[in-house]
Length: 179
Image 1 (cartoon, rainbow, N blue to C red):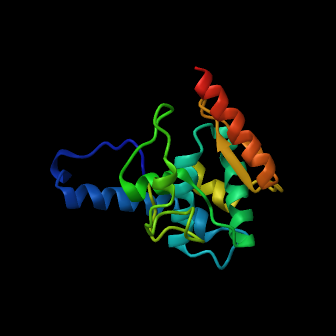
Image 2 (image 1 turned 60 degrees about the vertical axis):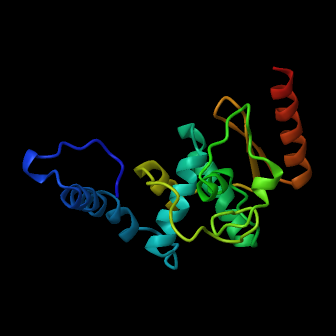
């Protein structure tokens, strides 16, 4: 279903009717992007929406969306797990905060949605991706970054190596602890 603001006619407000309106809007707005994609011909519709849903939950700042998509594509191509916190949150039904980040135990909890322990995409989307995330997956930024970690200002630190990534994580953790 396509996330948007809808004007629902008074005579079409049953749940089935509202779902049909949202699905039709997805079909008329998003599907043309998928049908006209350049390259990525082996990308299924389900995988497109699934990856876009993960990008949607990771990318708070619009300027980072295509870069985050590029990092995820790099990881998928190299067989590296995505390591995305929102997938763990979705699988466990939790929401992390600056004061309560995901614990190591949560990150290690088996779930088909845990992209720290399962390679590839989640079994289904974890959110309804907007047009910008759907576009970013089809047009990812070319990058050699393999990692990113969220700052607590909604932006991310991007890294090429695991060592750089771990250093960035430590610095962000130290800054948060200092608060």
